[in-house]
Each structure stands twice: as C-alpha cells, then as structure tokens.
Image 1 (spheres, rainbow, N blue to C red):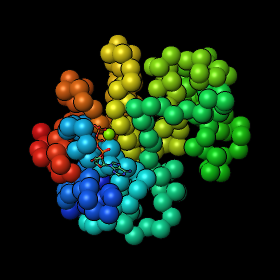
Image 2 (image 1 turned 90 degrees about the vertical axis):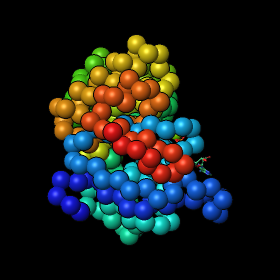
Image 3 (image 1 turned 180 degrees about the vertical axis):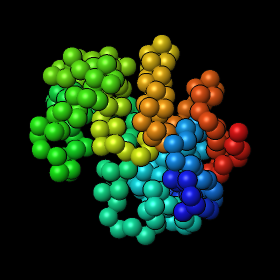
Image 4 (image 1 turned 30 degrees about the horizontal axis):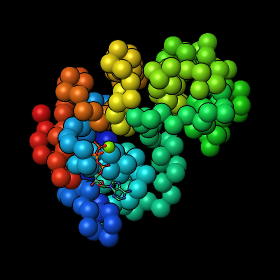
Length: 224
Ligand SMILES: Nc1ncnc2c1ncn2[C@@H]1O[C@H](COP(=O)(O)OP(=O)(O)OP(=O)(O)O)[C@@H](O)[C@H]1O
Ligand SMILES: [Mg+2]
C-alpha cells in the first residue's frame, strides 16, 4: 500500500443475484489514514455495499481491496481484522435489548484477551466519552434514539479501531439529535485520529468531511 493510505480499492466489483445486479461496478478509491470521507448518492447506488466491502462483511468478485495492510480478497480469517480494525455504526443501532448498556459496549471485547475488569473499565471510559456513563446499568430499550446511537458509537470505538464505518448514523434521528451524534463523531475523529467513512443523504452533513464521494450505479462519479 502507498505511504499514508489506509484503504486502497481498485476496479472493485460486487454482484448480487448471479450477476444480474451490479451493486459495485468498478470502484477506484484511496483513503488516507485519518481522513474523514462522506459518501453520497441515490438509493440503490451501492453505498452500503461499499462500506460492507471495506469492513469485510462480504466479499467482492473482482478487483482489489486492501484495508490497513490486509488484502481482503486473499485473507481467509477476516473476523480478527473486523474486530481489531473496524468500528461499525449503522442507521439502526442494533443493540441487544436484554443486555445492559454496559454489556452492549463490552461485546466487541469478548474476543480480546482483556479480563472482565479491564473490559468494564474500557466500556465505562467510552460511555463517559459519549456522555452516558450514568446509564451503564440501564436497558437500551429505556433510552432515546440519540442515546442508543451514542451507545452504538461507544461500542464501535471500544477496540480502538483504525476505521469507523458509519452508514447513515443519523438517518433514524430527528435533526437536533442527529446533530449531537454528528458532533460526537467529528470530535472523536479529530481527537482519536481515526479514519471516518460516513454515508449520508444530507448535503450539510456531507460537507463536514474532508472529501465527499458521489456514488452512482456502483461507481464513484465524482469526488470533491
Ligand atoms: N444482499 C443483497 N442481495 C441482493 N441484492 C442486494 C443486496 N444488497 C444490496 N443489493 C442491491 O445492490 C444494489 C446496491 O445496494 P446498496 O444497499 O449498496 O445501496 P445504497 O446506496 O446503500 O442504497 P440506500 O441509500 O437505499 O441505502 C441495490 O440494487 C440493491 O438492491
Ligand atoms: Mg444503504
């Protein structure tokens, strides 16, 4: 990989339904370590598919994709890559309802070699960072939408990922709550020097990034 890049993608193609859907149709993209990138584009253009490829949630058919020095087309055990390098924040936070807030944040650490005291300490540190330490023992069903999304962000950061992938992180929130979440992501980006790749439909949100990518029909149409 070139010096300074954390993501390098060349001519990446991903099909669904035996090739009848070309979700990604030749993506070329390089992202520098610590960059904040927004991805925009119409519904169905391939934005989530692209994030899923970067996070190794799924595999592409063709092209090359290297993330944090790992060749995702060749690597066979991707679960370690995912848990160490990637933090996911989705539109729907998918917290586990019958665990406490604290336990939800601890989940990604189960595969680490931290003991339960260290896990608890790290989870509380992140809950503090997102302003929810006092909710640690609460059930997520008792939280507001914005609070749930803050828990999801704490969970995404708990393993010190090098990349945060956020797929419409404010899509399910009202604009005021959404702004709180965005400010939090942006602060974390500048403080922790994490690379942030965020899909959004909102132009004013996209403008907060260092660079905006426009995706159309599975390709990057423009970058600004
Ligand atoms: N698991 C799947 N099986 C079959 N087709 C899929 C699957 N996931 C996505 N697709 C198709 O691939 C294309 C790209 O989908 P994708 O979810 O990446 O779009 P998107 O840009 O994220 O859209 P939105 O803004 O609506 O979230 C669409 O045509 C979609 O229907
Ligand atoms: Mg999507």
